Length: 256
Image 1 (tube, helix red, strand yellow):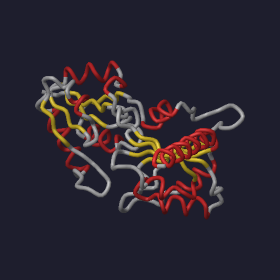
Image 2 (cartoon, helix red, strand yellow):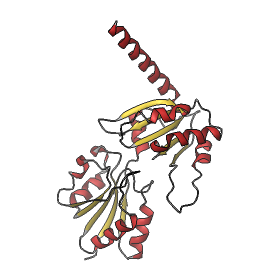
Image 3 (tube, rainbow, N blue to C red):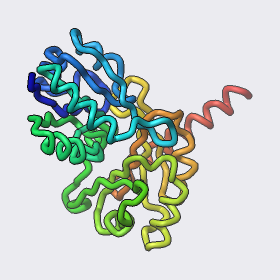
Image 4 (cartoon, rainbow, N blue to C red):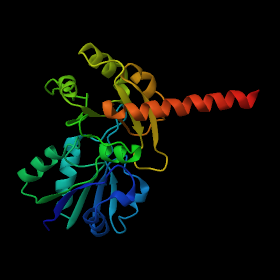
């Protein structure tokens, strides 16, 4: 048998944000290799598939990419529909290129099914557009993380050149991110929002400034986090600060 490997975007978490193509493939799949962060509600759609967890989480045990590549190729020799289910979109920080290159080298067919990436879901949750006429005409998605042996990651200059930035996989390096951007000339009062569990019912949003990034990110509870940075968030940050101040005042009055 020569099956097809489908690199499928699971989206940011909410099952109803899957594309129709993705949902139909999960229903047909014989075997699904899924990321650690794919929620059970999405995996429940894999009604007849063998589920194989190949998780990758920063600072925790991670399945080696070379092992995943070989597993996909081996599965395609046994099953007709093989799904590699990735959080967000496979083509954005999803290491899809490595898997596609390996499969090509083995003569195995593949197809990519896009998914909603976290920055889009987080923007929808906030009700704040990544772009805004007269204020933000450019958007970048970056990550400060670089693997061992990889070339230097010049993410700082990329963020400085854009009006709005979505920083992926940066919560654990919040202090370093803040210092690097301020040292490079980014104003310390640049507004930002740390979004945790975008699109999910337990999603949280933490508001602050670039100078406060370390403290703001520390408020998250361990879920996947995205940092959104730029002037488009100034009004949202100001409104959140007013709400927090009013809540503190109400709590003080309630104790009196």
